Amino acid sequence: QFYDVTQLSLPTQLPELHLVEPSHAATWIREVVKFESPVHFEDAAQRIMAAVNVMRLGGRIRANLWKAANVAMNRGWIAIEGDFLIDPDQKETPVRDRSQLPQQHRKMDLVSDRELLKAISIVASDSVGAPIDDVAQQAWRLLGFARTSTPMKDRALKLVHANAGSEILVKDG
Image (cartoon, rainbow, N blue to C red; front, side):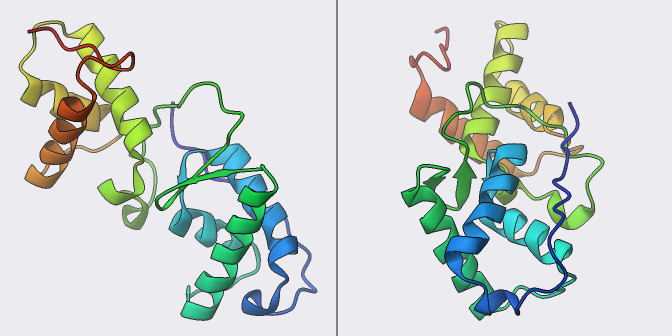
């Protein structure tokens, strides 16, 4: 499935984003996370900024939206894993093809470990006996990346080794 981006519809009569009450902005964070989980904080912030025609994520906006994310987490609406915002009610992590996204949104750091591990698991189950380097490369392709750089391959291999024998990923041999 392709990566669908949230299109928020926010009121036009808002104060500047760094002045919006975090408890109010938490509802926007929740909406983005419900639609795009797992989603990197920077991507969630971009969705909110796009809805109010703000072009640059400055320090004050970033800090206020992190406060909003923490409010959403404290209300049980989202979970936070590092820089990723997760829907706690999500039953299964989706594997999404990012090839149709603008270049600035196709970075390996914007893919959660959960989603990468799920892609690895899918490829590994379809390619039993394939070399692990090939599995890593195919997992990134499944996520919409045409090329697999050394850091991408290394990240995938690190996840495989960290999760070997787990329910998520069972590695033969």
